Length: 182
Image (cartoon, rainbow, N blue to C red; front, side, top):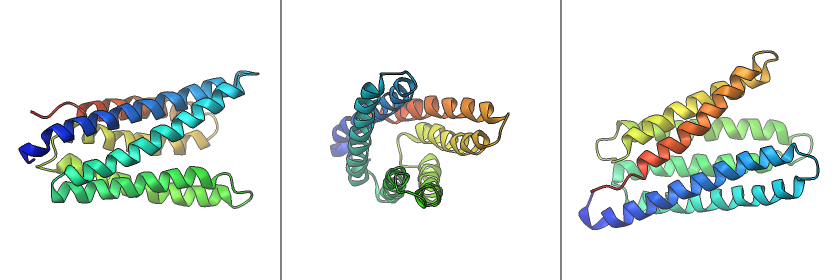
């Protein structure tokens, strides 16, 4: 990486990590408060924080793509596309009748783009956070397996456990990427 970009890279990866923390913790809090009677208003506030965190996440990923080397920028563009598709997929769920099917198709395509991006970044010779990308790649696989297992009665608990592990690995992966480059 060009030495003139290092300070901007460090600031931007730190901002990405903070946005991941915001949407991850707000999402967990929303789920928790959503099951407690009379606490739905707190869940709604948490949902707004998830949207804010995702928005900052996408903006900062675009900044990282501009700072990255050409090869890594291509992976970041795939990641940005995947995250945008994921965000759209979550909104598609609100469409009556066909929303569930459209969401499912959209999330599969989003998963493929994000998996390709993390796969490329973990193998990149120029990406400083490839250890973090390895964790994020693993998190994506565990998340997909966990989501599929949650559908199956009786072993759905295993899927839920895998999704918790995915949650933790996502935070740890972005923390490693946010480690300052010297």
